[in-house]
Image (tube, rainbow, N blue to C red):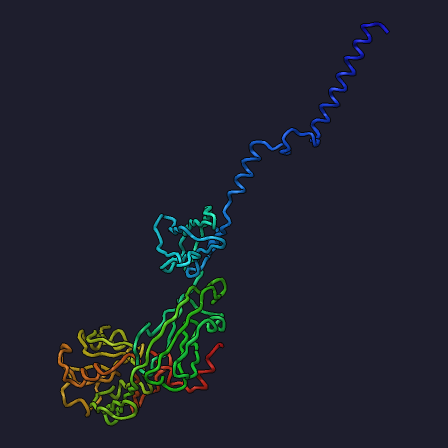
Amino acid sequence: MTNSKRRRSLVAASTLLGGVLVLTACSGSGNASDGSGGDTSQAKADKAAAQESSEAQIKITPGDGSDNASINNSGVTVTKGTLTGVTMTTSDGKAVSGQISADKKSWKPSVQLERATTYKVAATATDAKGRAAHENASFTTVAPAHSFIGSFTPDNGATVGVGMPVSINFDKGITNKAAVQKGITVTSSSGQEVVGHWFGANRLDFRPEQYWKEGSTVTLKLNLDGVEGTSGVYGVQQKTVTFHIGRNQVSYVDAKTKQMKVTQDGKTVKTIPISAGAPDHTTYQGQMVISEKFTQTRMNGATVGFKDSDGKGEYDIKDVPHAMRLTTSGTFIHGNYWGAPSVFGNVNTSHGCVGLQDKKGAGDPSTPAAWFFSHSLIGDVVVVSNTGDKTVSPDNGLNGWNMSWAQWKAGSAA
């Protein structure tokens, strides 16, 4: 072999060997110079960031993106840390007030949320090492079209008569009556059994077998949030209401004797002459509960079917004094200043109401009507008899006492 051929062969071998060495060096052998495993600058940054991550875990309820969300159960909680700040705003930027708990583990809004509204929540927390965590969420509350509410009486904190039922009127017809009734409880400190009765699809009343015990406290709990009242329509209320039962007053109107006896604890405390419905406009009979009180109110016959040939009301009195409603259809017990004093106790002259002697303006406290008005509570019972008319319908006003206990319980869905 010539010298030139030998040199070319040595160069080729050297090049091949160098390639092998290069490939060997790239295999990551234990001969790496710093023992770092080949970390890049990005890997080091990621590792450092992981070491700085907060252990605090924030949970926002309802979850991000929720639709048809509850208006009651929103809030923020944290584990492995404490909350340092929470903001809740509507989609248009209106702030919602709220408060972090004393232990800084939770936050809740201090007002009930609105329906059909989008809310945004931003929360921050720190762990034991002071490292910050952040969480954000947005949710939309249930729309009125997909929810129902119940308007109830009596009001929270009220003092009422012994005949006052709990009456709930729903803004949408209820088909899942058992589920809705299960979400409502009514209890009395007296220990009386309380049962619900449905009047159609929109009204649910509760009462005991006998009148409430005087001096007792009644509690209504609405746990309807998320309860499906009818297909695709859910409850939103989560509320507790208490009211108190006053003294036991029941008044007895006798249309034949034209007298009313006012009793307390079964004893007559006053007898008042009255004028009930005339023979062609008799007054309903039965147990009726005072549902509203007006110092003065307007009564127009046209609104209750008493019209003359021109279509106008047979009467239109703009200032009826001391009026208390007994039925939804328009029966009142009220003061009468336009009738002669000799009428009361002697003649039935009204269009179906029970009239008591009074003076125009409702300003004289000495009149029989003024006395009865001032001594009556919403929820007091007025029992009317000997009128010649039928017994008032139980759902015409708050008058479910005109059903037997067996009939009442038969209308329960529970």
